[in-house]
Length: 234
Image (cartoon, rainbow, N blue to C red; front, top):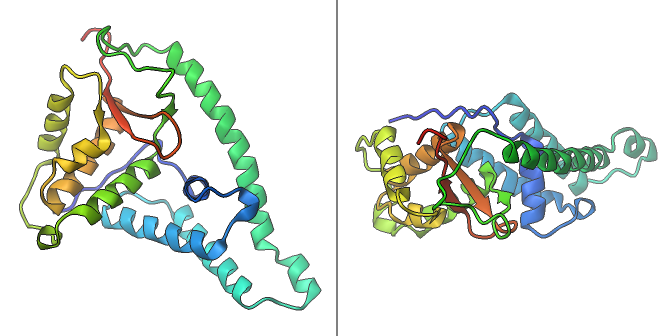
């Protein structure tokens, strides 16, 4: 059973790195390349296991990180080599620049949302004071990883039972009906097998992609809340 997920607005490899840096409460200048490389590869392996469409730039970044890690383990005493091949400094500069554009883009996106044609039912408002951050794909993947480890050992193996993704999409929308929101972790806890958990996660990604739900946080790495988006005519 294979589900391919193609997200039009899928974040790039620099997004993963920024996510991991913030997750580990680090500044860009404090990157621990060995730890970041290991976590980056873990995220990449999980996304590949889930058949999420991954662009070649993700693999290029993994190669770059491994190369930088290797050089830090075997430092060169040749000053010329250090000056000519300072890949880590180059990566940090890219992250600094990308972070600036990311923050500017976030501010502009709020303005777009405020003036968009998407409306919520009056009874289901998002508290903009408390939940102002959009949860990224990597926040969702992180919660999914945690839910995966919490499954009892006797049901961690995939049960070869077809669960249509459309079924899970309908289940998620039904759970949201009449509610202001639901915790993403609560949605994951409802799943009793690894197969159900994977299909549920895919369903959430599809709903986000199709702008039927939105994932919000009050602050980085806090609880993720899932809100349903209703069109004006609904």
